[in-house]
Every structure is written in structure tokens, then in C-alpha cells.
Length: 187
Image (cartoon, rainbow, N blue to C red):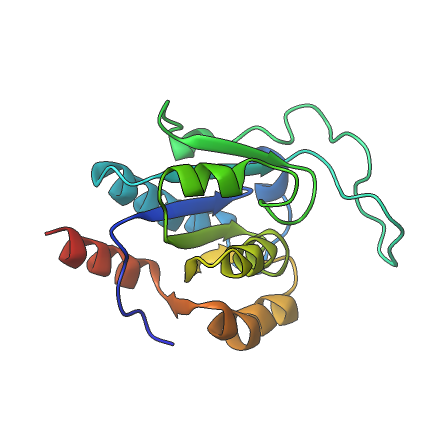
């Protein structure tokens, strides 16, 4: 679905732009993804809209076929990138699972801010971004996905999320389309 509107109370959720995640080999250059996310951050802050910065410090318990982090990450792994220019008004969510809603205060924060829509970006498309988008949708929020402001570790997983999953969860568009819509709805 093409982008149609941004609600008056729309929040930006930036997923896992932290030292350890950005250092992983991704489908698209992480520098480009960070740059687009920063453009969104600057615009949301300029319009005094809520900004949520998410990082991950562990993995959910349970057996999987693919070994993943179960304990503590190396020092500095979860440090948010300085390029994000974290502000005192930003809400930081530290998660220990794929999605930013599970066992965090994110749903309460968004409800307290009267947020009705979220725009998502970050790394990894099929993990943190998709899981957070699914829960946002299940919480009754309108979901917008800036698809050129996210990437994944695997091209097929990225493509599946972008082409098959995200259109079922919300509206998709480019960073520039989100920025243009933000300017039009805030003029």
C-alpha cells in the first residue's frame, strides 16, 4: 500500500542502530541506512514528534536451529551510534528479544504519548524491524515502513519482509516519501 497520511501523533522507531549490529555484514551498506534514518530523526525532532531509539542487549531464551546470542554481548555492542545524536527527549528502549514491545515499556510510552501511528526503520529488516512492526500492528497502531532505511543480513529475508510481510502490516515507502508526507501534513 502506498503512503497515504501521517497521523497527528506519529512516532519514529529506529531499530538497533548500535555498534554491534551495524558492524555486521548487511545486504545494503549500513552507512546508507544510518544516513536515511538520521534524515528521519532530524525531521521528526524538528516537528517535535516522539522518537524511540531501540537497542538490543541479548537474545530470547529457547533452543533454535541457528545459534544466536544468549548471554551478554561484548562491551560496546549495544552502544547507540553517535550519528543518531541522541536527545534527552528521545525514548530509549533496550530489548532482549527480537521485537521492541516484548517485556519493555514501549507500548506504555506510545500510549502515554497518544501515538496512533509509527514509522519504522533500522536493522535487521526481517528480525527487529519486522517483529516490532508486527507487534505495533497488533497493538492497533498504524504502521509505516521506510523500506530504503532498513537492511538485513540476508537478501532473501529482506526481500520477503519488504514484498510479502510489510504490505500486510502497513504502508511502505521510501525515506523521501515519508519526509515529503511529513512536511505536507505538518505545514
